[in-house]
Image 1 (cartoon, rainbow, N blue to C red):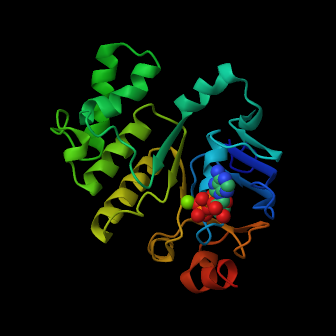
Image 2 (image 1 turned 45 degrees about the vertical axis):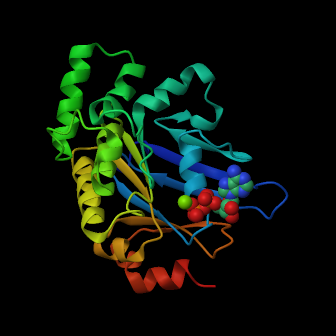
Length: 247
Ligand SMILES: Nc1ncnc2c1ncn2[C@@H]1O[C@H](COP(=O)(O)OP(=O)(O)O)[C@@H](O)[C@H]1O
Ligand SMILES: [Mg+2]
């Protein structure tokens, strides 16, 4: 099997989107992500990064176009097929979205309980996921009592505990200081190195410069196309500034 013949894990084709009567947010958004890649979605605030990620996990509709994930069109998925997405796509958001009064263990276990796994397997997988993010021993602590950096690590554990093939991270470092941000990106790079595809939305050019990965840029503020930067050289800070943040 080679990358050239393998089907992309994600195929976004001619997606358009207009909120209310405003000018279109997306006119024709088209790009691929190959299995095993780590890809940034970038562009200034308001360019549609969050909308794009929400479309991929079917929390937002598109006006036209298709988004194939593992060969299935998520935008056209029957309601009974949505658990397929919940199992195979992990989501991490800027503001963690943990259940504050629930324990760290319960926050991570919930995703597996929804999938109906046996308690013993849930226990093993939650312990493993918490160990993975350096939070072994934190099981019984209410999520709200943790620092922001720790909460985001719980969110990473929750996103990977179902062993998804794709992790979507929407500005996962946006509420963190530099040290915690680096820790979260380290974790996502490790998860990626183990084979999980990662799509990370950020407008943080310093992050992109420090950790170069292929970048899908929502260009020119009003966003009417996606430009793919195929080479690492294209995503250096200067190039990004010119290509993606020209006004
Ligand atoms: N539910 C919505 N209803 C109307 N407009 C929205 C909605 N969600 C986002 N928008 C608008 O769409 C644009 C893109 O938003 P968003 O996807 O959050 O961009 P980004 O994540 O790049 O900052 C913004 O102008 C935003 O105000
Ligand atoms: Mg956003």
